[in-house]
Length: 362
Length: 78
Image (cartoon, each protein chain N blue to C red):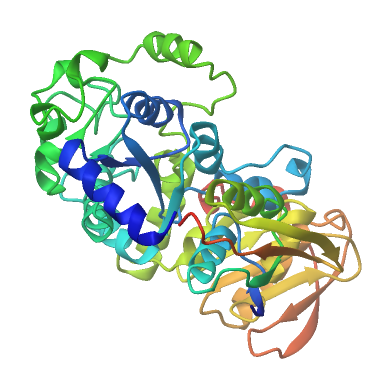
């Protein structure tokens, strides 16, 4: 069939029933998988979109840590798209997302998680994509009452309004609890074939997953963002306090995920690799930070973040020795490498564990 | 048809997938690209991305500490 014939056929179809297209926010969790599937069942052409903020780092931990190497690795958003038989567009939003984390209009949740602002941001980004790609509406897996900050009855309209999606935002899992959207009013989709899920119970989702034949799905949404993690948020808050301002670079938020973090002085902290995988990954930063490792004994790779003087370097070396197999030795030789590649060694006595105040651990 | 190389070393997934996705979008039908990665997760993720977007994996090899994944571009359905 020639291109012209295809175009003529499409035009003919357009006059009858135009194939409607929806972009689905695919997190890799169960709800977005189900929401997209509900729309596919109604004959909608669905493509997925997934946003990489830099904080979706669960897979990173597995990739870095040697002890996790045996765990199966997969990107759950890609896996979801494959189960659905749809395309997935993964968008890097690291830079744009900074403002969401640093200045959330609606504030944070229990940790540094700006969930409501995040949802508004992602739907607004999906709206941009929709316009650029001539799609008709947006699908999310949101459920009224499912999450304490971003998925409440009173915040559902906030997401629709502040994202600019308004009534082009369809939530197939709880649509019956919400006002009719534009696609419903136009008859593109059937409200009666959507759902009225409500609250924190996951049973309706599990039942629907079973009906669709999905069994190997990822954990519910929320757990894939490190901003919901208390210890991660504490480290990010420490970073901001040390810098004197709320800002971050991508490398900062990556390094917060690995190693032990200790801040012996307000102006510097050390990041101590906990195992071989982390040590290897952290070595990639040796031209950006002063780093150190023990020569006389096996031990961790350590990065020094901050401006340091001679005493600071000695203290960092004593801590490095403390976390090495020379922790009980009278003297440990430590290699110090500056970011400018200048190297020297120090012989130090490991700092006794009792001399490390708990407050140093971030 | 031309052959290309894409350096995605020291990037953790999904960044190698994003780099591959964005680079492949600039290529022509039948072009091939060697994506060089270090994250073992790319061994699953880049083939998964290719399957759902209609591209073909024509090679995957470990070379020293790198993983080289060769993709043949198929834009017919895009």
